[in-house]
Length: 193
Image: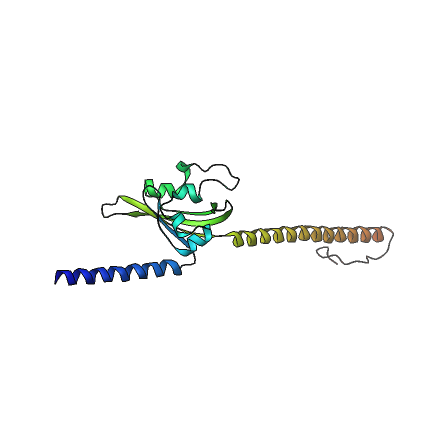
């Protein structure tokens, strides 16, 4: 009886693990789990793909050393300043946008990530979950939008400057006509009849 019950419980655990893996791999974002030593304990397919690692290369690896070791300019990112490290050591949840994550091949990408600490039943930190995505396209779109807005502002200043100059010239021309006893030729807005 107890052997049969253990077999059923084991079978249910295997099914549950398979469902969990299916859920993780269905997510479009990269998902990584780390322990208190910041070693990768689990990851989904999107994480491996975004970071360029095969499954065996990332499992057990030091997450900071693998993907978060440097700023975008290549200067070292101190572990003490790392929000992922803080989740493991201080139990702090963070949402970060714009920091780079590094791929296996040495290239990087701008990312947006959330790091959430995991706790045991006594509220001791047992690690953290990092959910991240590549925001290269978003950044490119933001930069293009900013350029377009700057172009529009330049055009607007140029147009407004020309319009103001035209009003000024019409006022000057009308004043000269009045000086020589002639009737105004141009109607200028806000000048009256």
